[in-house]
Length: 245
Length: 241
Image 1 (cartoon, rainbow over the protein chains, first blue to last red):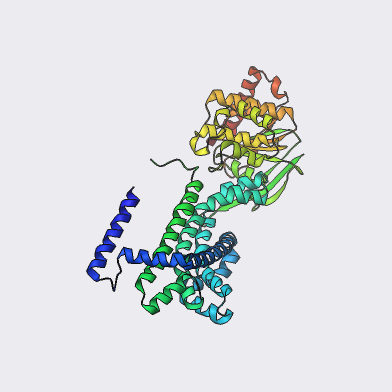
Image 2 (cartoon, rainbow over the protein chains, first blue to last red):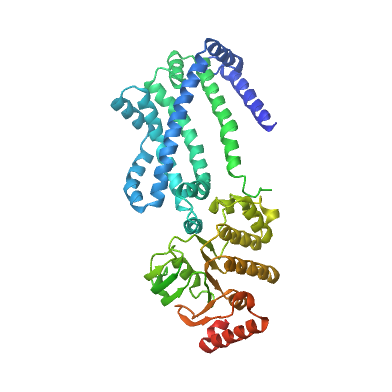
């Protein structure tokens, strides 16, 4: 109910702003809706959204898997941390644009280059977060697992991962938002489809309704994924915690 | 299934950089199925010793030969349950081969039946301690390490759990180590008692009890307790603290 109210306020503000600024600069909601409808009818909207989503899913999965493994290793093994730390600081502070441009130069304007570039941008934050989580692991539970000779994989699943879950969830949350932002830049610079490419086209044609149509559809998809996937997952992870009042 | 322990020295370095000796010249052997009880003042190094024997701490001088191929169960001083798994899942995690009948029996003896699906965060400390005990017993251990398992339980329950541990230890060959400062636990459960000095802990006296556990009368138990109390005060007045 509150969400609906907040959405209505957003629409109203937009409409009033459009009236004040003029349809040239900010088209009112019906004009954008019409642009969305046109793109949806031609199928281009769903195709481009799908392509972008696939890139996000691949890059996100790649970065999370690699990042969590490297972060765990660096949190557990001091030597790995010493060796990895300079690289980590380099990657953390390297601008996304540099990674994307270099990836396209070295690997060509290919799908692999795009996905790798997005993943590399997200990787270091996942490493840092999971490394912190690994350092905070409860040594008392490790000892318990060792005394009872719980096999490594069972211990990982039942003892270690539940402790890392909040950190992995935090890495996923911040990582997902980072990937949403970077994927469009990567598409704008080096792909010939996807939401980022369409926004680039709209920018060149100065087609503001088309630009907003893609932006808002993209935002809608992000919100839907947040509500349908991310939030229920977080709730499930914390179900053993005593409920807050 | 014999346990041989010979710890020449175990020291910690504290935050100020000073070395503190915790154990020195600590050696004993325990035959298969024997219950060795360590009685000493709190903070004397019992937990440190048990951790070394359990194989959790390798930073010491000396040698420990654990029973070869033994299934080891341990009750730590704190329950150390997984907060994100239910009581039953906590027990099943270490004992995947335990069948339903045995688990039910164990839960019912420890009065945990009503709490099987509860999470550890919903339990009192006394209940959590019982779950920790259930977990150690569920694997049918050959080698059992108990670090003050009955602390903070009320007397009636402690007595019942003590009987439970005694039954298990009598029923199978379980080499058991028990650290306690409760003479009642020591005398009712132990085959051999080791009286420890304050830190750095040494074994002051080794005291075998020849009468089998079940056959010990109240008078005999009282006599042994009095004997221990006398030795402790004779050897070291700090134990009263």
